[in-house]
Amino acid sequence: MLAVIPGDKKVDLDKLKKASEQMTLRIANPNEVEELTGYPVGGVTPFGVENMIKVIDESVFSVKTVNIGSGKAEIGIELTSEELKKAWNGIIADIIE
Image (cartoon, rainbow, N blue to C red; front, side):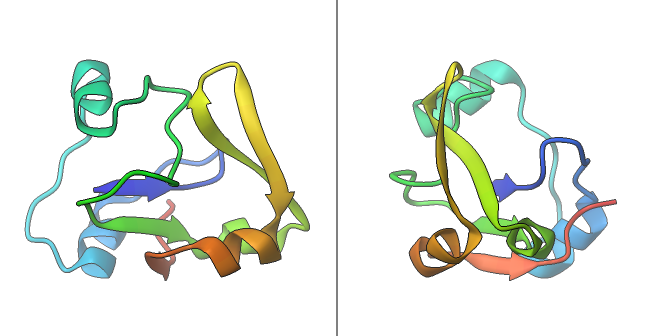
């Protein structure tokens, strides 16, 4: 599962379980993240990652401009929250603490 949240927040695993309808969840370690997504921690992009549930916190859309992972930790993709919402192909829910 891939969860997208604001960079200054923490995911609430109970909320994430409910939103994704999963019984158990745990945070992946950095090696698992790269193995599952093909991207290093800090550079994971929700675009191009397939075969997994994707959940984005609804608060991401409350700002005008967002910066999300591009696949490289030192490079981000800046777009409007409206553009992100149009491109998003996953669940939108309240998943932060």
